[in-house]
Length: 488
Image (cartoon, rainbow, N blue to C red; front, side):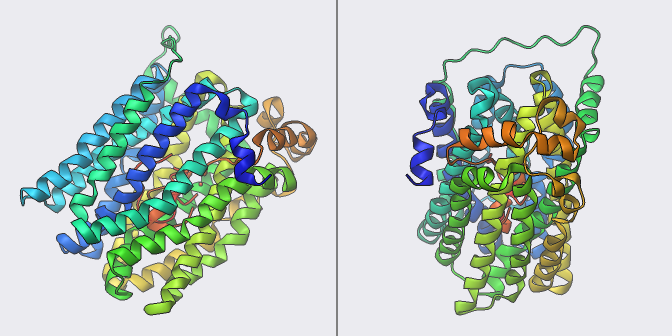
């Protein structure tokens, strides 16, 4: 039985409500992957945007995590999660749907693209934090790795099919009209989420607790936990350079490699196979090597392949870019699956929203900065120089985990051992939490918060956006730039 068959035979897919959640994710992810290609192409081909303007557009997509990331978690811990998911999908549908309408009327501007990116980004903050906090409501702890693996498989499959579809639609209809597919995807997702039957009780905030105190509690939980802190630093670094890649890659493809929209879509689809393979292999790899070991091993092996991006050239040389993306995407998905499931397991239910929001704030908050840096370097020294900066940055990504207790652990601890964060605690959990998770995964994996729409942009690492690379973003999906998925 191969990894995909084991995933289909898993326990998580027997839950009716989880199947609706998964189907909604499939619809929204496919549309998002189309926009991942079409939105930057609309800026470059229709509005003749400069590298700095494309960088600003990429920054606008992720700026929401800096603006509302922390309070979103505190608010969501006081709210039912399912209604938030549905409303966020509807807001994103209306926002992206405005682009083809404006283009048809001849009034599309960069200002509107910035506004659409920012609005969808804010909606995505609430959607992603609620989504990660809602999954443990649908599945028992022993099935979280499997559930995250199924969601990551859906996202990776969309990354294979979506960019090729997007490139074809851009070539056939033009970039703005191709974005209609994204609006349809978000609407379909909202309708499927309405079919979920589980009903949540509204959480009651502790008497006398202020919003500021709730936010502080979530931040403290993450920063005082040695393993979460290391994962946050690693993912934040990965997402910074994934966003830099996302801001530069479309300009590089169009103006340096002279690629057509159809070829760009094909390049992204073929390279996204790496993410799909990573989603299917993450569970078996965690069982074989250990969940903790997989976190640092996946990043260490893949990071040198980022050098292929600036080495790529016109014609057949573009294959180098796709190869680098495929390998980085594979590792980002494997990394995400391992670390996101760990976070969901060790966090108290009442803190899930704030923990996820804090992690998103820390690891996705670097993405606007990375996008601005990419646009500035490309404007001053050219897109290829910016890609060399990106490649150098990816070589640094594994350093925090290699210098942490994770380097000496096989499996990630749970419960009190996780709080201790010691290597001995991790080894002791080898046969318990770690192996149990591996068996329960049945060939599924966890998402990365490294880069998602940033995934398309960097083609690299939901580690959450990329939280590594990201963009894959992941992040799930949202509106990450087109290439490396943000790590979640």
